[in-house]
Length: 269
Image 1 (cartoon, rainbow, N blue to C red):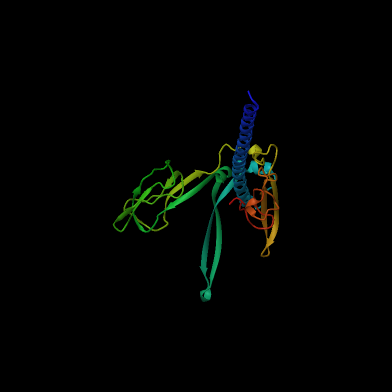
Image 2: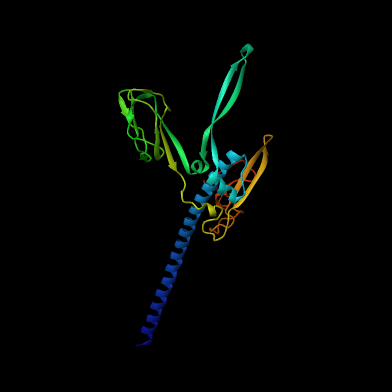
């Protein structure tokens, strides 16, 4: 074997090795990005759940909480009143009116159901004549499904759903009844969060072993009124490019709420 063949073999082996290193580098970058994306999706989902729990907690207790145990206990055992607000108008002399706002408590729903489930009302798409339901109570329906018929002029329409869930109630309307636009027809209920979420680790950040979300609750004055504010943040982002110094809000560490403004919006939205 002459020197030329030896050098050719060495260069071939070296080029293959360099190609393998390049492949591993590119593949490693792709895998790292996928891992970051997956972890951030889990963090966002956890923040959405915490936000909903805090909003419901605040509606009952008139304040937010920075204590994870208190929030978890509320989710497990709390009760949320079902409120009906109505007005009574009393006519006074000289055309004046006295308006009295009456708030009635109709009952209670568990905090867990209030947080985990959402109800949607399907109303008549327009004025018309009711021609029948295409679903029954207990059915699971999906977006774009057609659930009722309405006759408008000479045409029978089957409007598509914009929500999804389980049909929990069909209103007492009969074929031939006149409908007004927006008149309630169907009530849907849907799970918006994983029912198996571990409340014992409610404050833990996904992908950050032992790490917890940072919580700030406080009070600010707006228009002469003191109002509650909250911010919940991932203090150690898995994405190294997320920094507090970033000017763009959506490039800062994942969080919802604000220490200064009355908001519960997330910076991923």
